[in-house]
Length: 108
Image (cartoon, rainbow, N blue to C red):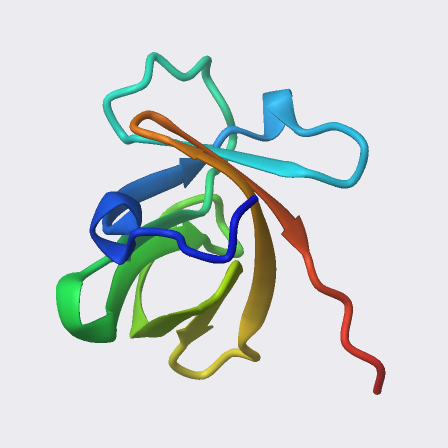
């Protein structure tokens, strides 16, 4: 992926399509995608200006709303939900309806 990712193209809603994950890569789709039934999916809303919204599966399978911040540096996307450790991803590809990322493992 080139180092110049358009933040405007990245902004908006993305939902984890774990059925499409393979080879250590994670696939996210726009919320309008026809997802099969699932017990829970992580969703991010990348808002202009770096605000983060979304939801994650809770302990009883109900979604829990999240908020926080996000930033894009080159091809690195970092999402930082409040009360949780930030996650950094390397953007592998970005299409209008499909985002493929590789989680970046940080040493402890």
